[in-house]
Length: 201
Image (spheres, rainbow, N blue to C red):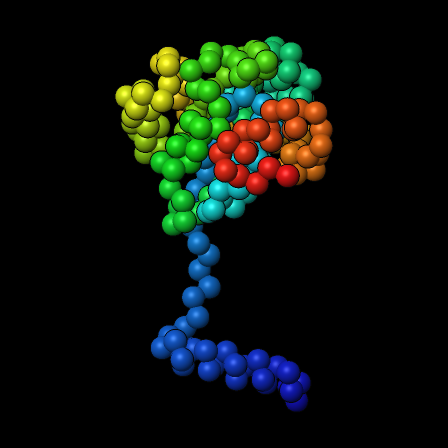
């Protein structure tokens, strides 16, 4: 004999089916992936994390030669990797073009191999594209930004095909959320979040 709770659950699901005129849609929303590098990943991770439609942001390393590099190896500049973030998003809620717009405002794309006091190729500005469609959108977005007058110099951001992405060590994930009072967070990340109208405490 079936438990009463099971019977009630069956009745509820049947009622939902009837009321909706069809089966309950259990198909998950589609997701896409975008990868950006724009200085220290602690900062751009938090900016992307707060965007509606973004489902997950992972800080990591990409675009280099060493397999499974460490933070120390990347920071030395010898591995060839950039500090980057991988953004998983719902394209029905936020477009790739909108993410590109966020990216241009999350850092200074006219600085070559640096962001402020963070200097080295590991801090380069780059868009790592996952499809020809993303590459075309990134090129068009750069052209539009260069024409916009928002930048005093030309954008130097690289557009390159995505390669192996290695998640950074646990201490670097959601760094601002876990360390809001850290000196770098207070001096660099909080002012940028405030300027962009995002949560900064």
